[in-house]
Length: 177
Image (cartoon, rainbow, N blue to C red; front, top):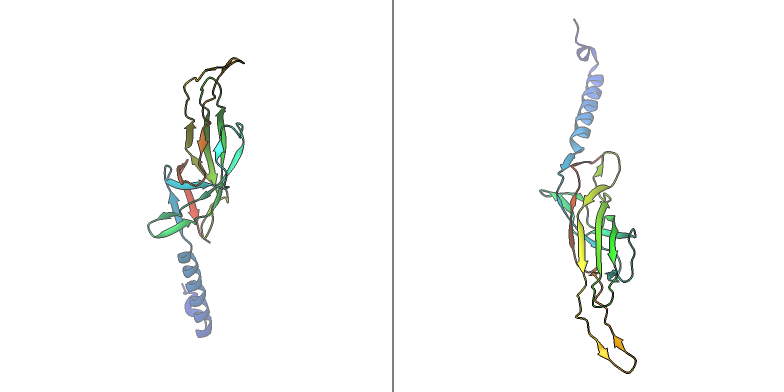
């Protein structure tokens, strides 16, 4: 049985070796990483207004961004600034007499940004919630000529200038081309 490569001309052998080297180099430059479920993801909200139980309703989507890159070792898998989504999952407005407001936000997803993407191009699913209660205020009653005045409690508020921790909801495979 003859070896096909040995029958190639010297120029043909060089071309075959060069092609093999390119194929090997191409497969070495591609990288695949698994991002485990439960990995911490540092996010912050987009905008400059406090998210308050007094000004949002349940079901409202909120834009988040990745505050710190997601890394494995020294390798950046998702660059800071990647955009994502959270949703207002529950709201109770503050009321009288002194009843505090409450807001609950659930993290949903973050897009990939940079060299790596998910195998199907979908965003990375997140899990985690923030819940903020407003301050309760003692029922203050002022007896005036008109009658009794009751004071409302404080609204539940989520500052947008802070970094919050979400987690990856499931193990995700990220690849680079």
